[in-house]
Length: 293
Image (cartoon, rainbow, N blue to C red; front, side, top):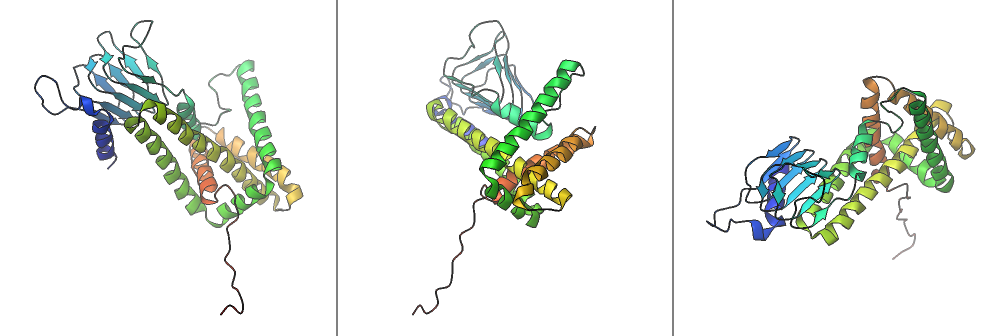
């Protein structure tokens, strides 16, 4: 189903490039999901890749849309249409401008960082020296500080979100998986179908919503875990509960092999907590009016 949607998006993205000028034969768009794509011969259509790196070493007459991957140009690579790289980087074969005739849209590495952080905690790094350990401690401090500030500013929404997650863990997990997939596919569709002046801000809006859901949901998850540990849900104990829950999940994320799985599951649940609880907003109740005729 995803391949069908991407194929349709690829054809719709550049109607002017749907046919070749010489023979009028149908275009040959290239679509890849999860597999790196190498363009070594001319493509008379669009190239769409999701969670894939693309190497362009020949002429592409249409657009190149890459979501969650990087684009590298070879010496013979060029794009007649637009280049949209969402969540990755585009690099030319030689220093200088990219060989793209149309508009180059690179909203930055926000989505790439988000995808990496979904399965790797931000305080986990590759270095082992004193500087690396110091950066990890700083990241830990910033995460805890941000969570405490959010709790101070939005204590009641966090408490409602945590209570909603406790009642339905499975629902939060499902809502998180569907929420992340929906936002990312919506961003990819916007980049593929809309002009760059509209698609890039819209895609960044979807990415910002995903980040906000992750940050809010993780703080609510910290609070819930801490309340379980302290066995206390009183409002004055919320900062201590959040700190305890944060410490528990942070320690678990550093365990080799298992930590990445736990952090990935926590990230998905966190997004689901934010969406299923509507960021902790109270549900409206319809009361019964006594004596209404």
